[in-house]
Each structure stands twice: as structure tokens, then as C-alpha cells.
Amino acid sequence: MPTFQEIKTQAEQFRNSRNYAEALPLYQDIWENHRENCGKWEGWAYAFCKSKLGLHLEALELCREIYPNNKDFDQI
Image 1 (cartoon, one colour):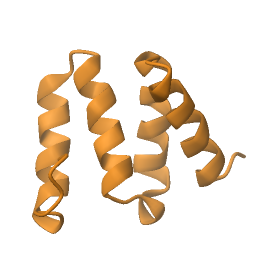
Image 2 (cartoon, one colour):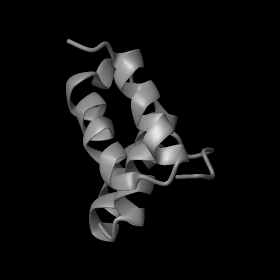
Image 3 (cartoon, rainbow, N blue to C red):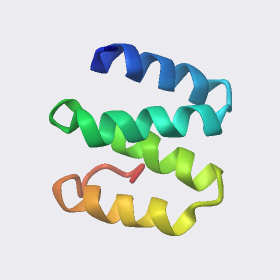
Image 4 (spheres, rainbow, N blue to C red):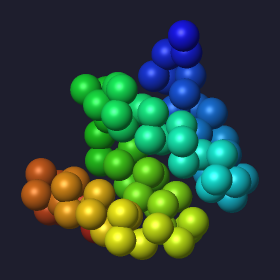
């Protein structure tokens, strides 16, 4: 079973190469199954991929979940 860091690295590679469809399920996996390791940047990347794939409402909901604990995080 891949570790959080392995999944995150692969998701980042897909996102950085603009392959959002491949990145999205990986970010979903770490967000749902490794939440204790996730921070604002993982949440941002997950929301970013959702937005790029036209899932704007889902991205907004995710941002609303992240924002209360990260009000100084401009990217969210």
C-alpha cells in the first residue's frame, strides 16, 4: 500500500503537468484516507484540481471547509 508521501508526490506530478484528471483521485485518496497528514496545501491542490475539471461547487465547498482554520492563507 503506497504511503501518504508517495501518493502526494504522484498527485503533485500529475497536477504540475496539468493532468488534473489523474491527480484528482490521488488527492481524494490522501484527503479521505490520510487526513491527519494533510494541510492547507493539500486541500488547496485538491480544490484546484476540482476547479480545473469544472467541479466548481465541490471546489468551493472544500475551500469553505479549509478556510476557517486558515484565514491568512490567500490561495484558499
